[in-house]
Every structure is written in structure tokens, then in C-alpha cells.
Image (cartoon, rainbow over all chains, first blue to last red; front, side, top):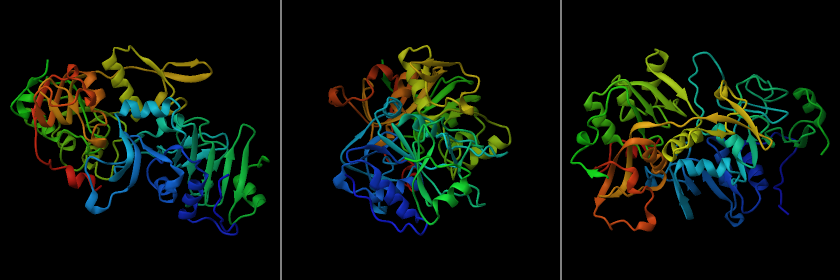
Length: 220
Length: 231
């Protein structure tokens, strides 16, 4: 039984609380990839007693905290090219082996950011398709179909107020039906074969949220 | 069999215009900067370059691009905070881009090195990057057919080599080195140290010397190291 941290359900979650919530949902002993950017915050809230091992796709298991200025090693970077440290028991490997770990179904969970996620679990997080935008995909497509479970961590609404959990993605897809859970400031959503389950909501009533998302929540 | 050459210019000699060049490194970690500098001095042109990225700042791969020697870049992540050299060339239509998911980039080179004709891969199914590719359902899962990426030459960086070409790398600077070493007709390695046979424990060899053709010792700290890691 995993103890859930208590959050105030009357307010949207802060970024740190969201990262803390995802961290609490990662089972002990899991192998986890935290992508780049905001999801890497999850690492700050993983208790070492849980023995979660972090993978970075550029070729390492056992990723430690971000390096302080004095420890920066130019040969020790994460996928976001941020200098990191190694933990005891860390392992290095080449790119082919690193992506075999994901594609081959060995990685338990990845946590990614997203532009949009569809109710069916389609993920769009690599390209806006805007004219003049230079596309860059990195490992996003490999990771999306590679981990046993794909968690998305994102703000539920974009800056213009439009939902990012949508009936169908309008941005180019990263992966089809690959996302299993969506962690947002306004609620946690489990995407099932039957539909979207709102596991919990923050700062908004369930019915109001369903209306804003134009979704009928499925009961768990 | 691997030969040890005296400097980086000799190491990259004889590369023909129009070659496909596999260049190791993930961002700056493992980027064989001195070999790239020698490639710039050689003046070889019309290259297709395979790398994870499309250059940082104005050094290394970015300098090769800026010098107009690259016709096409095959990579997974061209756009970075400091990829302005590539960005400008791409927007001006002066360099062609083939965007490949990072794991496919590695596996396609591994396939080339392992003699695999093509392989079915689940990455990118249903996305714009698999459009036009042959698709197949195997055991209930959808895959797309991916072809090998073969290099005429590979330029990679190792921590240590022995004179037979056995290599060890350092931390995440290993990245594409082992697959690129396998995938090219001629593999050129810059190593921080070259030791006699027996100087590397056979149990810890990462790239066996059979995949290596030319070795050059490049000691010291390259211009990219500290500054590159800070980004």
C-alpha cells in the first residue's frame, strides 16, 4: 500500500505538488524514464527508500540528482543535456541498447510532457506543425510506445484556456493510444478502454470539469 | 586491421565528396571535435551527416555546417537553444533534413552494422514520420519497415583505445559510438589515450577492434567540454 500525500482538493495543484503526486504513484523498484523538462522534477520527490531506478535514453540507468556547478562532468548528461550525477549501481550503455530497453518492454514507466492527449490515449508532444517551425523529435516517439505505462504530466489547459485533454489531437501525433494516465493541475485522469476516468480533481467540481472537457467521465 | 595515425588530418584523409559521415556524440558529450575540425580543413563537400543533433554554437558540427560542407543532415533533434547555424541554413533551404526518431537512428545503424536488410519497428506508427512506409501487423501489434543507415565513414570519440582498436568510452559520451563504429566502411576514432595490446582488460572492451580502422590520439580538453555541458 502506497501512502498518498494529502493535497488540498479545493485548489489546482502547484507544479511541485503535481510532481510530488506522480512520484507517490510510482511503485517501489520501478525502472522509470522522466523525459525532459518539467517531468524531471518528479525525481526531486522520489524517496530513495523506494529504490526507483531512473533511465535516461542517452545511455544510463541510475541517474542521480542534477550536478552542482563543481561536479559538472561534460561526459555525464541527461536526455535534456543537463549535467547530472550517477548513483551507486549506475550503468552506462550505447543508444541501441538504451532504446532496446524501452521498445523491448523492460522499462516500467515513463513520464512525459504533452501538447495534447486524446481521450483514447493518443499523444502529441513533438511538433506543433506551425509553418516555419523546425521539427525535432528526439526520443519522444520511441519512449511513447516503449514504456509499459506512459504517464503524461501537463497543465490541463493551454494559455488560451483550451483543454489539452481532447476528443482527438489536432497536433501531429507522437504515438497512438499509448498514454495510460494524465496528471494535471486540475485532476488525474486514467485512460481506459471504456473511457476517461477522473481519479481525482483539484480546484474544480467533477461536473464542471466534464463540461469544460466535453467528456463524460467513466466510473472507475 | 586498425592503424594508428599521427594526427587528425591524416585520420580523415581520403574521404570522398558526397560521402555519408556518421558523427558520434549526443549534443557535445562524445562529439569528436578534433576529427570534425580536420574534416573542415580537408575541404570535403556535399556530405550527408548522421548525428543525433545538428550542431551547437559555432564549433564542431555547427562549424562544418557553417562552412557549407553538408548537403543533408539525418538526425533526431536539430532544434536546440544554440542550433542557430543549422536553423539559418535550413530556413534558407541550404541544407536538407531527414528527421528520424532517436531509437530508430541507433537501430538503423545497428542493423547496417549487423547485416540486417531491414526491420519492422513499432516506433512512429500512426505518426507523420512513418507516412509512406510499409506497415505490417505482427502478433496483434503494428510495425513499420525501417531500412539500415550505412556510413561511408564514422568519426567517433573514445576514452581509451589499444593499438588493435579495442575501445572503451566514458559515461554518457558512449552514446552512438558503438553502433556507428559497426555501421561504417571506415571507422575513425579519436581516443584520449592509445595503449598497447593488453592495456585494456578484455572483459571491459565495449567496441571490439574489428570495427575500427583508424586511430588517433587526441589528449586534453576540447573547446566544447565545459561550456557544452553547461547548457
